[in-house]
Length: 157
Image (tube, rainbow, N blue to C red; front, side, top):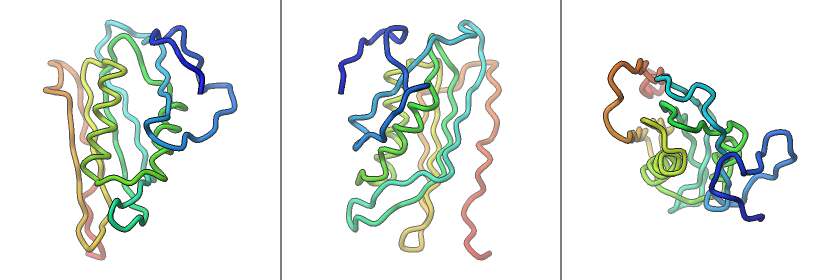
């Protein structure tokens, strides 16, 4: 893997290039581009309704609907690189809590948004759905933050 500069403008983007799925989340490179509306308070939402990782105990696939909301700072995450990053979890073993919070913390640390939250709505394993939520702090005053729109798991009910 090539070394990349920490400056978003100097990073080669996945967009427009052939990009292989990273073998691990740690290997995945997230690309950031300058925020075209820097200084404006607005919300960006990414939904990944078919997210997959592996159970660290059984090695079996775990499935979740992830919703990532953030108020951009100086940069925004490039969506193809985010898709590749999330796809890298397909062979990654991790507890729901660690995976969900880890994704949110990595995005927050690298992108430095004004605010970020992630909801991980995990499908049942052992008959128990697990929902995991993390946010960087209180939402900024004046930011419209809609409900994440994912219904609680009801099974056959």
